Figure 1 (cartoon, helix red, strand yellow):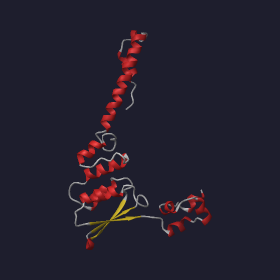
Figure 2 (cartoon, helix red, strand yellow; figure 1 turned 135 degrees about the vertical axis):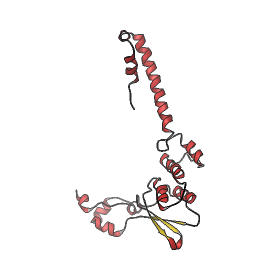
Figure 3 (cartoon, one colour; figure 1 turned 90 degrees about the horizontal axis):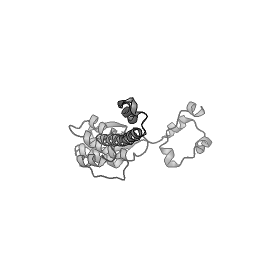
Figure 4 (cartoon, one colour; figure 1 turned 60 degrees about the vertical axis):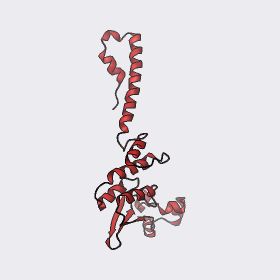
Length: 195
């Protein structure tokens, strides 16, 4: 919410103060201080919500019993907190999906293997290893019953997909990608490539 505090203050004063330099100076200084106060109040309010918290994340982590690691990006810290908050109650595939989806790059497919007491999680939102896989695994171990094994699968570029892109070797080399970049690359359709 953006508002002009100075204009609001001047609107409340009688018209004969509009020519006074003293009143103008005084209301300008007060408006600046009120704007600072308003900004700080909004910042404090943002700390009450995990999705917008910054310096307040350590309090959320303390509340959830999570060790604070200030070297981690805010998004990863928020993901761990949200996972902890969502992970209570009966564990179903929907709960597991909700826990993993709360993490960055957490778009997944779930599969149950009843005969092996296993839940297989395939990351489809991004290729390769997610940057916070350790946090995902730790969060799942806290909510998934101990008798269930958790297996992770990751997606990478497959030759058939590369063939469908229809690139020549020269075009592929022109992309100047390392092998690590190529194996997580998502090629576009040939029509989009020519456009």
